[in-house]
Amino acid sequence: MKSIWEANVENTVIRVENNWFSGEKLFINNELQDSQVNYFSMPRLSGHFKNEKGERILIKANIIQGFFRIDCIVFVDDKQVPLKKVI
Image 1 (spheres, rainbow, N blue to C red):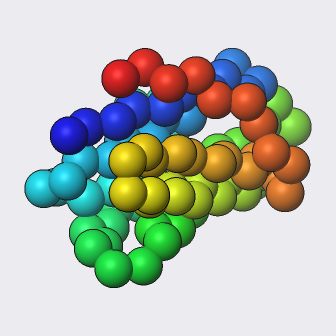
Image 2 (cartoon, rainbow, N blue to C red):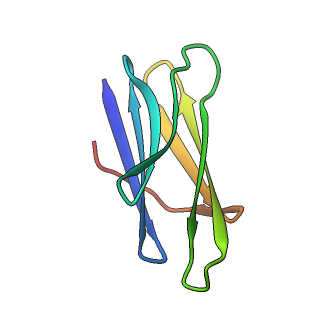
Image 3 (cartoon, one colour):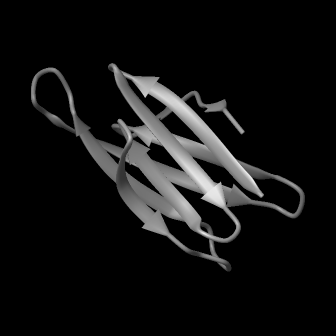
């Protein structure tokens, strides 16, 4: 099973992918920034982008795995951002 979530923050596209076989991946503007294969604990991914002022903005993503459902939470600069589930 594959799940994909996306968010757009300051003209930056954040995409988180979860796949049972290839693990979890965090993409920022289609560039892979973190990847993890994790079967037993909650995956945590991190990355960054630079805003218009050239400041580095931290991104954190947590994938919450349940028995029947998988969810994702993304924080940009320590604030939760809304996600859209693509798949």
